[in-house]
Structure formats: C-alpha cells, structure tokens
Length: 162
Image (cartoon, rainbow, N blue to C red; front, side, top):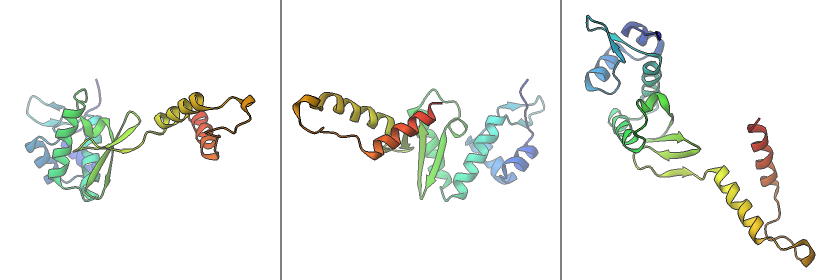
C-alpha cells in the first residue's frame, strides 16, 4: 500500500497553512486521495506535490482564482491527467502560468504555445537542407550552410540522448 500522510504531515512537508489546506479541500482545489472511516483526510505523495506546486505558484504572485481557472483549463485541454498540479511542470511568470508538456511550452488558460519546440524546428531545418541543397558538383554554395548553432544543437541533442 502506498504511503499516505495526515493533514498535519502535509502541512509540515509542503509549507501550506492549516487554513489554506482546509480551504483548498473545502473548495475542491486540491482534495485528499483518501479518507479514513472516521472521515480524516489522507494525502498521497502526488497530493503533496500538488499542494507544494499550488503554494509555490501563489507565493510567486498567481491569484487563487487564476490558479483554479488554470487547473480547469488544463483538465479540459489534457483530459488524461488526473491531477495537473502534480503531473505537469508549471512555471509562473508574472501573472501567467506556463506548462511544460511533451516538448512544448504553453500558457495554461489560452493554450498559446510560447516557445518554438527546438527538436521540431531542427527537423524542419534539416528537411529544408535536404530538399533545397544544390549538388556539390554544381559549384554553388549551400543554400543552408551548417551554422555553429546547428552544430551546438546537434551536439546538445547527442548529449541529451545518452
């Protein structure tokens, strides 16, 4: 059986206040995975991650309403997730929450992608190199000569794939 934590332990481990924990549980922001026959809350490790993530986002200046709306949007966008706060990597930048998922970064509320996925861009560049490159016998220079950033990118990808 997986380890579970009492409300007191959850507070000590995550740094949320007793008041926050009670309010979040009452409003359904983050609910405990289990309840004892006596009705006491028991939190799983994933619940603790969700609590800690919520606390960090709020400490970073994200309003509780924006956090709640972001969770709702994420569950609509990624319905396979049971607990977005513990299953995704999130980052608060100002009043925007970004989510890292499957190589992409997007804003939680709008779904707008923020960063061009490098691997996808590299494949696009390689495709264009392969289709538009003049033959060496033509005497023309390459349309897309390899640049130092491409070499660095390839070196980085080679290092990351090990």
